[in-house]
Each structure stands twice: as C-alpha cells, then as structure tokens.
Length: 308
Image 1 (tube, one colour):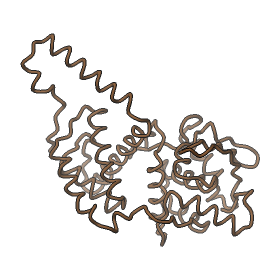
Image 2 (cartoon, rainbow, N blue to C red; image 1 turned 30 degrees about the vertical axis):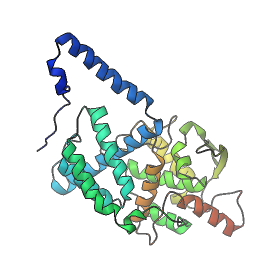
Image 3 (cartoon, one colour; image 1 turned 45 degrees about the horizontal axis):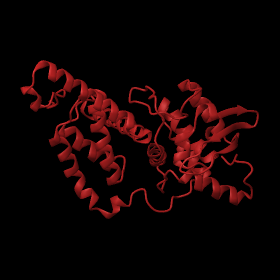
Image 4 (cartoon, rainbow, N blue to C red; image 1 turned 90 degrees about the vertical axis):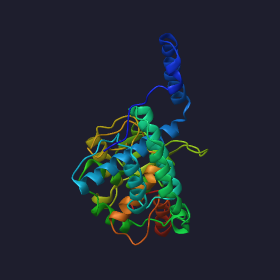
C-alpha cells in the first residue's frame, strides 16, 4: 500500500563507468554527512520531535484502523492524514504543521533511507493551504498566555495517564511552574543540574536566548499530587535519568529518545495536558511562568514556591 522505494542513484549517473560511479557515490555519502554535521543542533532536535509526533500519529491511527503501519510509510495518504491530525487533534498552528512536514520528510530520508515521493509532500501542503488562510488557525499559540492556577494544576495532575509519558508530562509542567520557567528554559534543563536537597530541589536553569543562567530552589509542594519535587524524583527514577537532558521524547511503545525535547514540544505537552484535563482555558508554554508570578504576587512572596 506504499509507493515508497529506497533512494536510487541519480539517473544521470547511469552513463558512467563503475569507477566513476563509486567515486560519485562516495561523494554523495560525504555530502550527506557534511550537511548533517553543519545542521544546527536546534534543527536536529526539532526534527527528532517531529518524528516523535509522527510515531504518535501512527499509534493513534493504529488504534482506529486495527492495523499498525510501518513508520517509513510516508505516503500521500499518511502525510495528508498527519496534517489533518495535527490540525484537528493537536490544534497546531499552520506554520507549525508546515515545519512538521519538513521534519518528517527529512528524517525519513536521512535516518531511514526513504525518499518521500514528491506527490506526497505536494498533497500535504495542498491540504495545509486552506488552513493557512484561516485567521483563527493562524492565531493558535499567539496572544497573551493564560496564567496557570494551582487549581488547574490539580485538575491536570488528576487527568495524567498512568504511563511513563504521564510521569514525564506531570514533572515537566510542575517543574516549569516551580522554576517560573519559559519553554526554552525547561527544554534546556539537565538532570545533573537538578539536585535533591533537604528543602526540595536545587535547579540550575541554563542560559537561553541571551538570558543569563540562574539557580532556583524548588520547595516541596503542599499537595503530594502536584508537588514538583516528588514529580521530578518519580519521573527521573522511572526513566533512569541521572545525566543529560531532563526531559526526553517517548515513543508510542514507551521507549525514551536520546535528545532533549524542543521548546515547541514543551509547549505542546503543556497544552495537551490542559486539554486532557478539560480546562476552560488553553494553556501554553508561558502559562506556567505566568502562573507562578501571578500566584506568588497574590501570596505576597517570591522566595518560596510551594503554592501547589
């Protein structure tokens, strides 16, 4: 059911002799390696998260069709289906969907040796075109972020699935709240920079986007279900994380990825958990920082962060 085929040498090479073909093939391989080496780290990380979403889409599709398709089946049908899924299920902005298409096709080619048919990418972007003309869809993710409240965090915690991904998600947004973190800061957190101490966690927040690094003490929360300290300890123990990125992508089969989540993936996790909890407002990546600031001001203190 797929029109995919492994990449073949350029047809123009057919006229050359074997020795010439060997040299040209070697240069093709060297070019791929060079392009991969100079590709920015953030781009590689974004592509990894695009592929993780592709895996999630395939899991969702398998649940509804009863048939698990190979992840390398990047066809006209699956790629258009991916666009529709991102739009209707993930409520992604059109520009974000456009980037996802690129990430999946590049990963299919570079990591799996599959050249995605041009007809598939053309069809996917045809499906995307009317979405880009919709002002409401274009406005997704824009505007002032709603500030998360402790009550909303409790609702989100109650709706977290009993899985490794659920443990990660809860630790992610609770720690984001606890450090008053931006999405890029949460994505940049390192496990070795999160130290368990008597009062809670000492968290080193790396420098991102020109902002200086900072060190934050995250105190134990009042409610065990929404305590960022307990949530982090549970997630890190379950995932076996002691060094490297604090938060990793997880496949539909529950396997951990090796690269850090991107800031965009952090935002999507927060939004997805808020939606799952049935909140009346749409939370975004900045909602945890805004929520911490708002809650601490109302409490009349900033030196502690055990509001949840």
